[in-house]
Image (cartoon, rainbow, N blue to C red; front, side):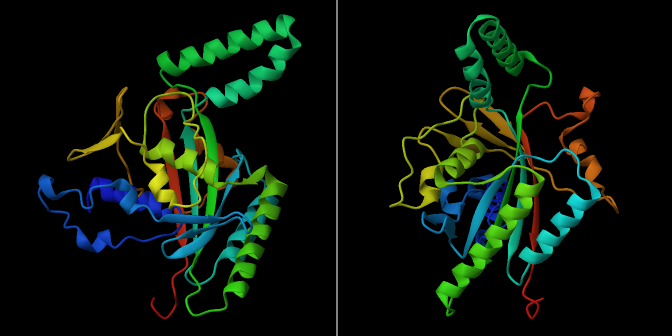
Length: 303
């Protein structure tokens, strides 16, 4: 499978989707045959959003997405609550996707912080402006530029083919309610609406180094979400060992890595280590990045 297909597969797996391209593409194919189909949006499985239920419909599943303020440390009780949540969510065919994003688009957060201080005027306004200027300068020249660390949890279940649809959605909404309740006790958790999802995905597949988010006028509920993710004017160049995201303004290289060795045990107290060492900059990743971890509960008969 090619780098682009792997990237598309990772994005699709954000909702627990699988792609038939896995079985169609020969990894030994020459470079001229690396990309099939021609459009990244064809690899994405996002379809529709039910505004009333706040549930996403994908190609083969339905689910929800939550954004949670990252937990830097976890107490033993908090770890037990999260373990219980995963057990409650898990059932045959379901998938849980965890995404930690080091978001380089810091303008909005800086503006949210600066605005109330500007309104106070005086020394508060001056200090706020100087601080914002400092972070914007660091974003360009610092060895390890500032990022906003964001965490997303998504859950999906296979579509209810031949089953009672009402019971299916009631069951799915109950799981979402449970997840929000547990995560809200540990941190700040919120729904990810289609506009926020488009903003998130657009920053990952239309990558550039602009510090502002790509705000859209509206989400169009009359067409697939996957068709609205990829922006005109951007392209992905496929190289042998990396992808190059190309926009009218600049370009950026993209590489993915797979973990092949995991610690036997992991204490929630060390969660902050996943974003790098605070005191040793050589242990920090000096670029935008994301960490993805997925849990799938296979059908037992198939297994």
